Structures are given as structure tokens and as C-alpha cells.
Image (tube, rainbow, N blue to C red; front, side, top):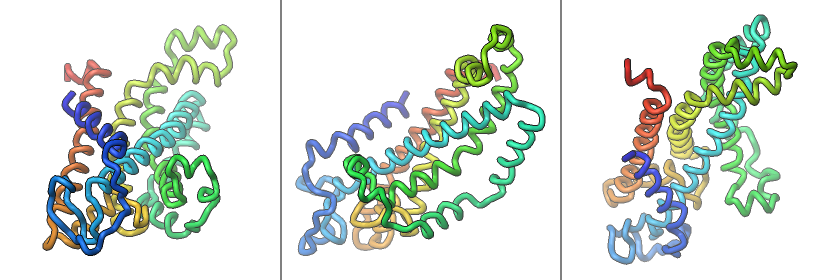
Amino acid sequence: MAGLFVIAALSLLFLLGPLFWSVAPQAQNLSYGPNPPTWSHPFGTDAAGRDLLARTMQGGRLSLLLGVAATFVSLVIGVGYGAVSAYAGGRTDALMMRIVDILYALPFTLFVILLMTVVPRRTWVDDCALLRALGLSSDIFIMLVAIGAVEWLTMARIVRSQVLSVRRREYVEAARCLGYGPARIIARHVIPNVLGPVIVYATLTIPAVMLLESFISFLGLGVRSPNASWGILIRDGAANMAVSPWTLVIPSILFSATLLSFNFLGDGLRDALDPRSEDA
């Protein structure tokens, strides 16, 4: 519950904060320079004179957007893939799982970095009015697709193991005897009964995606300046740590609090949705 409260408070700060704090995160004042927290700038300013509170809210929004969206992509792919594999069984299941094993052998972080490097920065996303309205640039969209495309493997294995335990249950056999097709049985009778572990793992996937995004942005391959993300804020803060330590300490504390809160929430959901874990 404490993790859920921190997530809710930080989400409100990141999403609704700009309604009450109208300072633009890209606004620079080089003559102002780095200054510690004051009443006019509660989080201080960075080396370019930009308000750190506004940039922290922008970075938090971006990280939450990528975390939730990439987790949703991996959820859709992993649940569908794992459920079909387990329900089909036999050679189909063996073939689909061997594909997962092969993909597991690939270095995912290097794959995402390579994709971010190879794909052109200027894409159709920059010309789409709807995606621009949602704040998605080509950098963010490419990162979303790249991370979501490699985070579904563990989800597929978890769903497969759960479906293997329920595909011979009485309600599944009854649906099969009524003449329902495999697609309807999987969608309406199998997947709804394995959502407990899926929800728990999805909650734990969000901080993993946020951490991967910050790492890629820290290397300079993800979100590009003047936009802000956790990785960019921590990279800039580390570069100026000796002169302006608050530019590193404040984003790092908020980032760590967000990751820990999601992990605590996932652990609590596991205990709530799986009573056997408490007995163990």
C-alpha cells in the first residue's frame, strides 16, 4: 500500500504538475546558471539555467508512458503467444518454445541499442498529428517498439506454464464439448483464469522497462535533448555533480522511489493474488 501511495503521488506530480507549474522544461537562461533549490525553483536549475522541477516532471511522464506502453505491448504479444503455444501442445508447443529459447539467447540490450542506432530518426511518426498530440516523437516511438518487442519472452513463458495447468480443467473440457473453437476457448475461458500471475509480472515489468529506457538514454541513444528523461537527467547530473549535486541527487531519489514502489506493489499483488505464497 505504501508503494501504491507513492506511485499515485508521483503520477499526479508528473501528469498534473504542469497544470500548476507553467515553467517550460526547455526554457534556458544561461546567465542564471546552476542554482540550488529556491522558492522560485524548488528543485533548483541545471547548468543551462533550466528549471529542474519542470524537467523532472517531463522525464517522469516520459518514463511512465514508455513503461506502461511497452509493458502493454509485451503483455499483448506474450499472453497471446504463450496461451496459443500451451493450448496447442505437441509439436506446435515445442516449436514455439524453441523460438523463444533462441530469442532468449540474443543480447536484448544490445539489440535495442542496435535498433535505436539503425532506424532513421526521421520517420512517419513525426508527420502524424495524433502521435504528435500524444507527445510521441520518432525517438520515443522507436524505443517503445524496440523495448516492447523484446520484453514479451518471459511473459510468454509465464502464461504458457499457467495455461498448461488449466487447459484440462472441467470448464475447458465443457466448452470444448459445446463445440466452441480454440480461439473462443483461449480468449474467454483460459486467459481470464491465468491473469493473476500476468498482472503481477506486468507490474514488475514496468520498472524494468523504465530502467532500460534510462540506461539507453544515459548512453545518448534514446530520448534526445532538449527533451528530458530519467537517463538524460541523471547523465547531466553526473556530469555536473561536483558543481551542482542537486541535479543528480533529486532525479536519482525520485527515480529510485518510483522503481522501488513498483517492485513493492508487485510483491504485494503476488501475495494478494496467490494465497499459496503466504502459506509458503
